[in-house]
Length: 256
Image 1 (cartoon, rainbow, N blue to C red):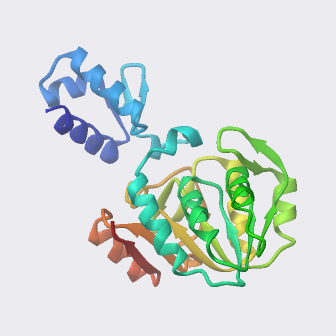
Image 2: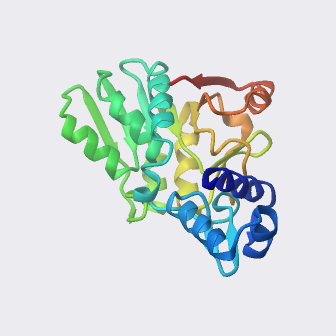
C-alpha cells in the first residue's frame, strides 16, 4: 500500500508541481500521520521536497540536491546509459565531460579508451582518471570556483578557460529535458559552464535517465536544436522518445 501511495503522490506532483497534506488525506483516504510519513520517506529518496503543509516537485523549481544525495538515484539506469555512451567515443578523440552522477558513470568506462583527452570541470571525474593512472589519457581540469555541493568548478574563470579548447564531443547531464526547450538546469552557475562545454564541441551528447525526461527546470543549458544525441534508459516512455526523434535527435535507449 505504501508503494502505491508514493506512486500516486509523485504522479500528482509531476502534474501539478505541488500538493498539500490536506489534499493527500482526501485523495489517499489515510491519516495525516501516514501522509507525513510518506512525504518524509519520499524526501529521503530525493523524490520531492517537503514544505510547510505539503510538498513540491524538486524538478519544477530551482532546487538542486547535492552530489552525495543524487549518487544513489537510478544507479542501474545510469550505468546502462554510461555503457551505451562509451560506444560513441573513439580513441584519440577530445571529449568535454560535464560534472554529474551520470557523467561520472561514463568516466568510469572511458578510462578504458586510449588514447583520449578529457576536458572537465569535475573534481570527482578528474580524481577518477588520476587514480586510474592511464598514461595515454590526458585530463584537463578547467579551474574556477569550487561548488562543494557538486564537487565541480564554476564561474567566469572556469568558462574562460573552457572556451580556449575545441572538443570532438561534449557529454552533458541535466536536471530536466524537454522536447520543446531542450536540456535544462536549476543552478545558474553550472548553467554557464554547461553552455561553454556545448559551444566548444562539434557534437553534443545529452545523458538523461527517465526521471528527467519530459520535465522542465529553471533555465536551458542546451537548446533542442543543439542536441545531436540523447542517451536515456529503457523506462523512458515511448511517446517521449518519439518526440525527440521527431525533433531530429538520434535517441539511444540503453537496456539493462
